Length: 477
Image (cartoon, rainbow, N blue to C red; front, side, top):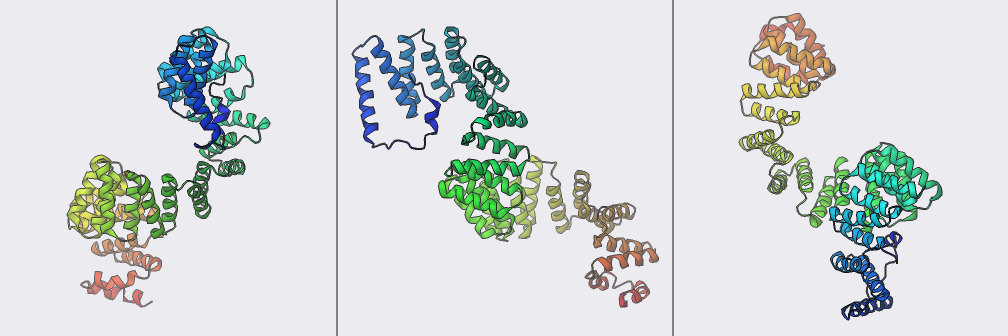
């Protein structure tokens, strides 16, 4: 009896639902069922049950198969194969505890059956009991050393446990005698990707694709690796191949959209996100990234709609509150922006970019003292942000807190010596404190780094005539 020979699961040449062979088999199954109804006994009934169970399993009609598998163990209660058959069905129905009970019953009848330990290991792996699964695969290997199926499934479990290097050792060993096994190449590609061995990952996916060119998942994974390598063109080409094979591959549309957005092709990216949502209308990241693309294209009303939809689907999606707040901010609807920023911060307080946006919004609303507290949060969370230190120092300067402003501006310069703005603000501070020589030196540096600052000088110092005269020669140089 076959009991779901795993080789059949990878057969590309599936029988047509209208093929004479399939129709003939369906007639046989109906005949077997009639035999059982009439109370047939002996070997013929067991054989009929086996055929029916195998048929329904292949059709993925697991509930129907299970009913007949239960009859099979009643007819043959001392058959370890019958119990294993029922266990495999229960495994496919995600009823793992019941499946394990069947395997245990089978092992009590045949304790040295390596196939039983393999199937038991697969079920334990599916139940996220990885360590126990590994013990079962090792037990299978005790009875059947170098069993390819046991080794392959052990590698898959190690992979799920993020023990990629150990999985690679096994998969590489298997590859020595199975160079044309496309599944091994696929899993190796996946492991190498997660190990940041990207060139080897692409090589393995290419080897897999040579043997199975119509595997959309392989093209998709290949696209992810090329994206990680920074080659957007090859990444998009891979996603396009995946989509040519499987048009409704929502994740491929989504990743293609991300790749296009990363190089500023926003119109095309928007189309890809819309395709994602065509197939997955409740996909929150797709709604969010569609909003991001609209925002980047300065289409703020459409962006707001997308972020709002993401929030409707996931009420604690702080990224979309942040995104929508940024759009309101850009449209100078500051009160709405502040509401969204505050809600986002309720959900995620350790987000410096969010505090930064809130600080800028508060500043634009004329709430400098509140913005000062927000800028302070930014530099506490992101201590190496030169621009944040500048905004913090410049706001302190505007509020007259000169002793605190100077260290903040100097720290901004320390982090980025080529940033002109903090030098310019230091010059203003030194003018206020009448340290004219220091002010002129700071201005020289600021003008040298950014000549456009000269145009701001007249406005900023229009009422400080004596200082203007003092630095007139500098401005004429």
